[in-house]
Structure formats: structure tokens, C-alpha cells
Image (cartoon, rainbow, N blue to C red):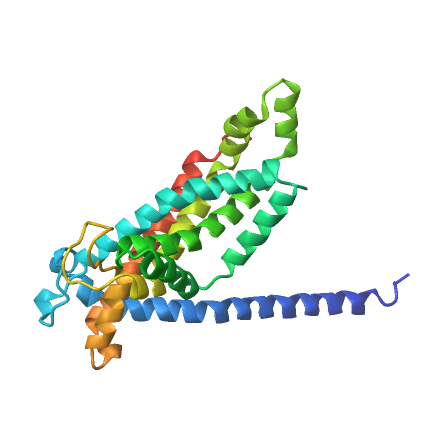
Length: 292
């Protein structure tokens, strides 16, 4: 005896499945088109500039083809981001560990979470203006690469805190309870069990946070002066960076759409960020817990 009504139902499900599949693929393609377009444009327009060895060594913006280089800007970017990382990572990790392991249900934990949420939504230009007001206007220090570092710290810490929180929450509670049952102190459980288990995700988040602040432009435009020379001192004198170099190239170029210097700077920044993302994956894979 043939069942009535099942074949139309099966047909409708197949049609719905095909329609959903087509829509998903269409959304994926629509999302990839702008990304591929941007990357292709930056690569095509910027490749001729970075092909020269002078591009990586020269410290002069210059106007002749052989004079253009971003060596000084790369040095400034790496110094500023390195100092920012040295300060932000310990603070961000400590806050994240406190919120997950000690601060749950406590008033200080709730206040800290609220403040981290606020910092997470602060635009970079607001952080830059705050540092300018405090560091330059009130305290009287000069504009410098270190002032940029202070603004980047404000932007980087909440990213690390949030990532650390999420990674620590993923660690099974059973691991903690097993350690406590063996008489292991809480601090040692965190250091020897919880953090090693979450180290892979934490390292990835830190590298992505570094990549994020590396592309910020407002702090360097407001807090440090531009220079065409190499400056290895974060605390004195103007210090260029890749985003500031791009801004300078934009100002001196009549037709920015055809500027090899501007597009070359953009491609250099993309390459550095891509290297950081690849490095994050390698580190995460290398330190991921085995047989867990």
C-alpha cells in the first residue's frame, strides 16, 4: 500500500535544501568578491613599488623612483607595536585570568568586565585624543612614538582580555576539579593545567590583536610627527610608521589612485599582517596540547 503525502513532503524538503544551498553559496561569493577585489587591487598597484630592494632599506619618502622606501616606517611600526605588546600582554592575561578564575560573582569582577566592555568599543581616535590630553597637554611630554604606544595599549588590552576569557572558559572544569582533588593549589592549577591547555587559543588571540593595532592610523597621525629618517628612539623625536607613511604619501600625491608609493605602503602593511596571521596559526599548532 502506497503512503499518501510523503512524496510531496520529500520533494519540498529537497527543493528547500537546494534553495538554501544556493543562497549560502551566493552569500559566500558576495562576501569574497570585495575581499578578493581589494587584495588584487593592492597587489597589482603595490607590487611594482615593493619589488625594489631600496623600498625596504631606504628611509626617504622622496619623489624620484629610486628614492622611495619604507624602511624607516617599518622600523617605527615594529618598535611601537613591540612596546605595546610587552605592556599589553601581561596586563591583558592577568585581567582575563582574574575574571574567569577569581572574579566571577564578585563586585570587582563585574566592574572590571564593564570597563573592559567600554574600552572594547572606544574608537582609536578617542584613545589618541585621551593620550594627547594627558601625556602631552597635562604632563607636558613631547609627541613621540611612546605616546602612540600608550594609545595602542588602550586598544589592545581589551582585545587580549576578551580572548583570554573565552579561551579559559573553554578549558573543561573537570581538569580543575581533578587537580583540586589531588590537593594542587589553585594558582598552580592555573599555571600548570589551565593556561597550558588554553595556550594555543591565547597565543592566536595575541597575534591577531597585534595585527589589529598595527593597522591603526589615528594614534600615529595625532601623537607623533612624521619623519623621513630612521628613528630607533620611541621617546624622542618624530617617528614614522606605515600608516603615517601612507598618510604622507596621500598628501603629497596629486592623484592618489595612481600612487605607487601609497599602494606599495598598503601592500607592505598587508604583508606584515599576513605574516602575523600565519605566525599565529603556526604558534597555535605548535603549542596546542597533545592527546587531550
